[in-house]
Length: 219
Image: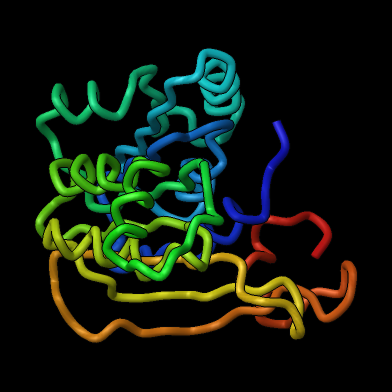
């Protein structure tokens, strides 16, 4: 399976201070986010969750072939099942969720929020995160930039608050495409930064290189 820029950005950007004891990757796919956290941290428990059969098998294989296999474990279950059965909590939860629908904005902000919840299961995701996150834990997620304000509003309704925000655009002249968000149970004014990936095709900015260079062989 192809490794996307979104996952690399999120795995590199996630704040690991203080170093977490336990981490969870929701919707792990190939397991790249857990593998990046294994490379970056000394976390003793690095769990992943994947419901798709083929992705789960590849994730397990990648974990077994990595240098950190003794700390990595992938559960084959839905998020709802997992959240109901697991009693432990995690210091760091990370997620690169699927994007189902982005173009539906209307003049009615409340209707937009309702449709947003229907089109993308973010309310379900946040409810599960609240149950699984430790009291001082951090939740990191990447979403379409245009969904940022709605996602933050849903999270606040469940007492999760943004601490850091990174707004990403592909080039200096392009529109913002993605938002990386860090949440916790602590309410404060979030730190908001921006990142441009390229100045021209395959000509990466210094900021992008500094953020991701530890994970690319040729960077």
